Amino acid sequence: MLLPVPECPLVVILAYDGLCAFEFGCALEVFALSRPEVGAYWYRCVVAGLEDGPLRAGPRLSVMPDGDLSLLEQADTIVVPGWRGVDTIVPEKLLLALQRAHARGARLVSICSGVFVLAATGLLDGRRATTHWHHTEHLARKYPNIRVQPDVLYTEDNGLLTSAGSAAGLDLCLHVVRQDFGAKIANQVARRLVIPAHRDGGQAQFVPRPVAKRPGCRLGTLFDVVRTRLDEDWPVERMALEAGMSVRGLHRHLRDATGMTPLAWLLNERIALARELLETTRSPIMEIARLSGFRSEAGFRKQFRRLSGLTATEYRRRFDATG
Image 1 (cartoon, rainbow, N blue to C red):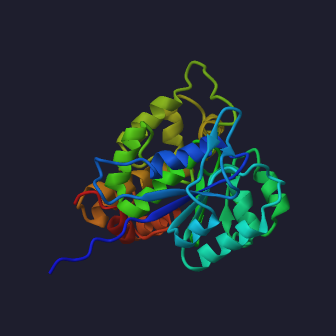
Image 2 (cartoon, rainbow, N blue to C red; image 1 turned 90 degrees about the vertical axis):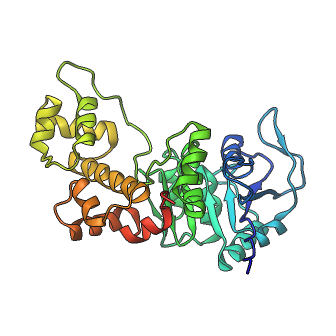
């Protein structure tokens, strides 16, 4: 008996007059282009216009939408690119359309200042969200019920996904692809885009200032050494010795470079390796925990779930690239 071929998921990208062209282009690049290397089962993608087209998207660019907001009624995923102004009122018809879409199970994705559209719906109240670092304080003041995360690339909370500015939108779009099609396909798309296959949502948005370049400051060397020997013990004192600096200096330079403490950075690196091993190998979870530098499987499972939002078993099932 032949099983029916599932219908390709529908992504609807919102467009409006005064559109932020880069964020709009990120969504088109990931969801609208055909992917011969993937096969026929890929996204269907259309553009829904808030107003009748053509819609201005910069001084020399205009967009002609495929239809109006009624397209949102069919969407599996709705992408809201950067909004035309953080204090610009969102039309009631758009708010109602997004609320209805989310209520029936559609995933809502915002890029950069597009979060102000989702915030205006009230759906983000009590939930985590982010935006471009330049707007995070404004978002927190304007919508105090939102749990604004100022130093991350993207967030996901109850089908509501938000990203930081510009290129972080690509990271979030790839995250969506990983959820829908698995790690192997997402990696193929990333390779075509010539971008990292996976930047974790919890990574810092930007480096506040460059790491000082002086003799003895070998932070890059430290990173390389630790990443190849994550199964070993790395107390802060050992990391400082490897970097050729004091413990205090290591804390300062590593926070400047990553926004993290040395131990937080180490934990993130260990979880990143564990993710890779879960995606690309059939190794038992106990062995993956050991290779990633955890002294107990229970401790590994606890930290993995805390940082990834999934159990290790669920993560392997969702992102297995070995098939």
